[in-house]
Image 1: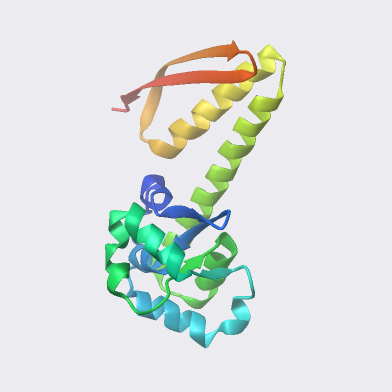
Image 2: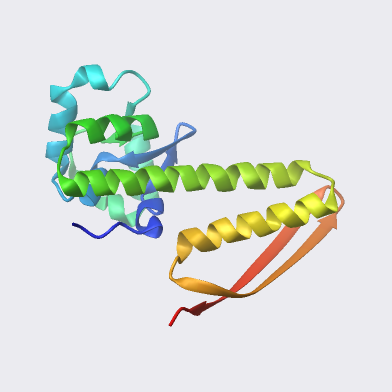
Length: 183
């Protein structure tokens, strides 16, 4: 069985395009351990599984912007093909086509990553809307625990410290979790 892919490895590949969180076809291929053309061929052979909104085809301007802002996309500069970006739904459908064990494990990791990002986003959104100090403390603790869990599952909590600073409609918060390796 292949090792489960860490959150950071997937999270670094998620970009925002047209207001959606997506992963480019080249990054999906890298995660799945296949060539980009295999991903695109799977999509081409199964168009009914990818309705509008599941895959975005990048415009020339979007492609240029990505190459300009992300070094890892430099190979796109010389590609004549328009890159595709998979939304979360598109990735789920791709998983139904690619049947390898690595594809299954990778898809599970991607699903967990998207779910974790949504949970953190909801918690932070809720934090910005509440005026109750106890609720804020609970939400800060919850968000800190979620972030800590995502980034390093093999570390145990040693200490946790939270401070809130409210400055005329600006909420700043800092949540520090000190970790130590489990022995």
